[in-house]
Length: 392
Length: 147
Image (cartoon, rainbow over all chains, first blue to last red; front, side, top):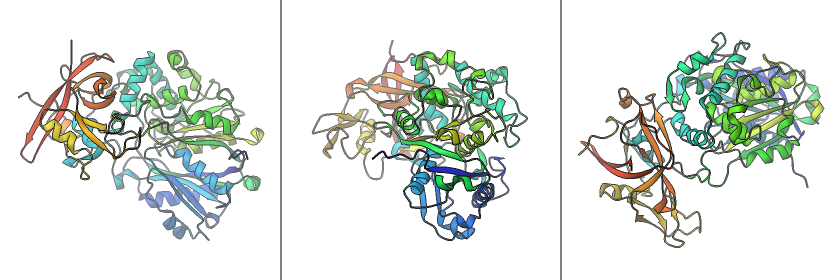
């Protein structure tokens, strides 16, 4: 039996709250989640009462039972949390929801992520407690304690091994900021970035300048997934899930920076599985959203998904290639985590769907194969590909 | 005794309550690097775990190893993410592989000029950095480049 999700589930609705700088949401986190879910349901033209499942990731605090009670959902049939932190679960939550629908567990599953850092504290800070034990005891006393510091170590090795220059990272950042200027939802809308500003920006931790690092934001995003046979009952053109892959390579979670394959975005074993399920090759991808916790993760993600050989990054990573509508591979067309909003990457999945509908603020004309890479360098990670009607 | 590499006030390492890495910290306090090694298959493993990932034996111990290694990766940190580092300025964190222990890796600071160029693969030796804070004593393992 050929087990696949290809074409069996579609995204019927997407929704977001307004996006805020971290700590500036007037609403608490749970209310943000509710608002995004209601927006996604309105987009799909359904009542929230029809939702019978929820899937999220990164230890989201908005409990599905509370959501279902608050929204008056008639029945809860699926309540799913993808293990792992950061944005690694962004496409996994989509895959998990789709698997539940394809397997007959549920009929209408909401994938969501909500964040209010003012309410619950920031990501980009070191621990404040006085004593530390466990893995952190082997890193924090040496001043290695933030996500940027964890991942710079991987990226530095990759860039040194393959002779990658800083301009490759800069191209990723410039493309994101370019796209955000056309996106009124983007936190960095009206704040363009040029090469000199990037070059003159302060180092956070080499090789990351300020503009290589994601934002920290408050807000929420949600998607409504339904079985493919219902896909045409909704107002918008359906975005079908063509494939999803979740996981990590051998001992990716070996403690204290001891994974055997270290300088990696964690996608080497996922990318072949994704392409096989989706039935597409890298050259078929019309538009790509690739999670930027830090630009270096995007660099390695694109290499590991076969867009560029590891020793060809300096030639490949130029801004023009990544710009909608005419670039070879339009990248992070909403502005992404760098310049639209850091919603742990669920906004990237929403943008991928908008591209298939032709509703992006930076549309890629005729986009039918729309790919998302979620949460590089953590474990587990995930990725998925959405397709328009023509891809089935 | 030389001053510690980083400003005081960072989190202080303590052995895990379940005892998993206690022999490592006891070793450092005595000026010795002790890493986990499987008594069944003799393989090294780090960070410590309750089982050997190679042969699935639970019969693990800690053995001393010379604190000599090679730079596997490194980073120069500029932005302070902890109040203790507010006036620190740039500092170097190194990921050091230990060929004498099967190539397992340890995190430490690379002593010397924080603006120095760091070659991957460069040989380093360990420096035991003792902290006698009023409320806790512990030892960190730092590294310096060998010529």
